[in-house]
Length: 193
Image (cartoon, rainbow, N blue to C red; front, side, top):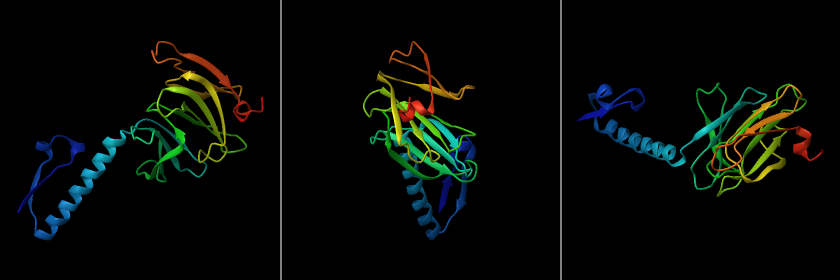
């Protein structure tokens, strides 16, 4: 029996189609593989993983934080131990709610602890409640959090400023016609100032 296969990443079906003879056992394996590929394709389309941010943890592991369209309405995460060549441990972090909106995350280099700062619209239904969170364990848990802006909060971008504070540019309303700037310290996130 002739079977046609192609690699969707490398061009059109016509450009990449190959025909070959295949025995019945191999055909059954190919059918199982096609089912698995269909499930993976559904998972990617269902989650629509977009607008992601990556940090490098202290041991060199990459941690990926991803906006997604899953009904759980929380940030998706995954890990890579080989520089991003492959990813594992995909999950949705129930402690990082999101309404399908971009998030911002940075690793604080040269600190006494492996600090990671995470910022997003932390509401499961609407783009509001801009919340900044602080991790002291390379982004695994975020025990500290402060609300930066209660109402509308859309996209943001963070950076470590020369004075040691965190600088943030963010869209303060759903019209996305303005960009505001603010800054704060790690102590402010902890509620110590």
